[in-house]
Length: 111
Length: 111
Length: 111
Length: 111
Image (cartoon, rainbow over all chains, first blue to last red; front, top):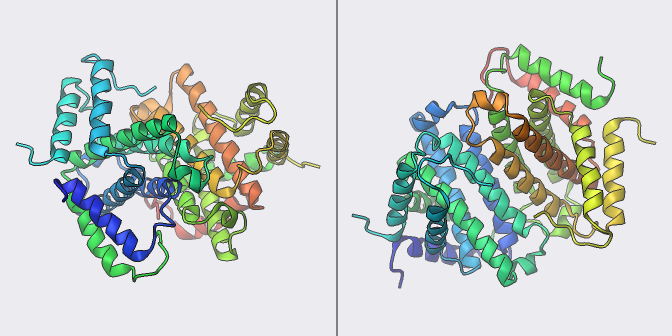
C-alpha cells in the first residue's frame, strides 16, 4: 500500500503503462530519451525570458510550464521505477554529499 | 510541517540554497538550464547501451544513473518550488488528461 | 566574402536576426537554451523507435527529423557565431584529440 | 571529392568511426542521445552566467564552450550523415520558411 504521495503516483503510472501495454516501449533507454524531449520543451518555455521574467511568468505561460514540468516528472518517475530507484532517497543521498562539498558562500559549481 | 517525503525534500533543498545564498542564481531560467545539463548526463549513461542492456545495467553504472537521476530530480523540485508548482498534483492533472487521450492498445505518442 | 557553404549560412542567419532585431534575445545563454529545446524535439522523434527502425525512418518522420536537425544546426551556428567560434575548426581540433585518445577497436566512451 | 569544409569534416568523421568499428553503435537513435548529452554539457557551461556574462566568457570557459560546441556539432553531423541529410540545405530550407513566418519586429517564437 502506497505510504506517500510519490509512491501513489508511481503506482498510477505503472498501472497506466500496463493497461496501455507500453512496457515494451518503456525501456530505461527510451524513457531517458522521453525525459530529454520533455526537458527540452520545458527549457523552451523559458528561453527568451530574462531571469527576472522567469521568476514571475504570466498565468498562461506558468500553466504551460506546470504541464511540461509534470511531463518531465512523469518520465523521471517511470525511469526510476524501471530501475528500482527511489528518487527521494537518491536525492537525500546526493544532498548528504553536497552538504559536505560546498562551503557556505561558495558559488554553485557542478564540475 | 512537511506531510510527506517530497515536501520534506523540497524543504531541505530550500534551506540548503538559503544557507549557501544561492537564491540569486536559482532563477527558474537558470534552474531549467541546470535541469537540462543533468538530464544530458543521465542520457549519456544510457546512450551506447541497447534497450535490453538498459533494463539491467551493471551495478557501477546503475549507481551513476541513480546519482544523475537524483540531480535531475533536485533541480526539477527546485524549479517547481520556485514557481509554486506541486509536482505530484501537476503530474496527476496531466495523467487525468492522458487517460482520456490514449485508448488502450495505442502506441505511445509524444506530442 | 563567404568562402564556403557554412560561412554563407552563418551570414544569412546573422542578417536575418539583425533584420528582425533579435540580437538582444540572442545571448549565448539564450541560444544554448534554444539549442537544448530543439535537441529535445529531435530526440523525441526517435524515442520510441528501435535502433534498427531509427536507421530507416518512414519518409514523413525523416522529413520531421530533417527539420529538427536544421533547427539544432541553426541555433548551434548562431551560438558559435556569437562567440567567434569556427565550428569546423573546433570539430577538427576535437577530432585530433579523439584520434590520440581512442585506440582502434575500443568501445565509444565519453567520460 | 569533398567540395567544402563541412563535407570534408563529415568524411573525416565517417572514416574515424569506420576505423574504430563504431558503426554498430552509431544508430541515429544512439547519436541523438549523444547529441543530447553533449548539448547538456554545453548548457551547463552557461547555466549560472547572466546573459551579459555569457556574451563575454573568460578565456578558460570560452575554450570549454568551444570544445562542447564541437562535440555537439560532431554528433549532429554524424546523425545527419547516417540519414542522408545535408545540414546546410536543410537549414536553408528552414530559413526560407522562417522568412515567410516572422514579420520584422516580432519577438522570437519557439514553436
